[in-house]
Image 1 (cartoon, helix red, strand yellow):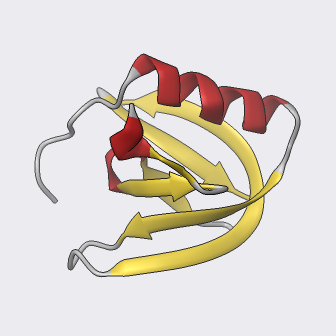
Image 2: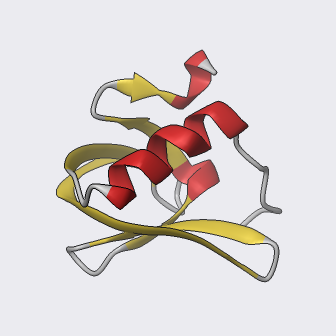
Length: 79
């Protein structure tokens, strides 16, 4: 994958709020081939490792935050 591109602090706050409440969410993201994918899962955690931030989901999936397109209809590009 390419170098990590940090997301906006405001969108990060949205994700943190959802993780704190263990909210089930529809997450749209781009896979490693750049294809749009959707998953419905509980947001379990937002964390950083090695200078990269991740979203951990109840499905067992872990996504880089810069892969996200939207969460529950809130678009990253709007921030």
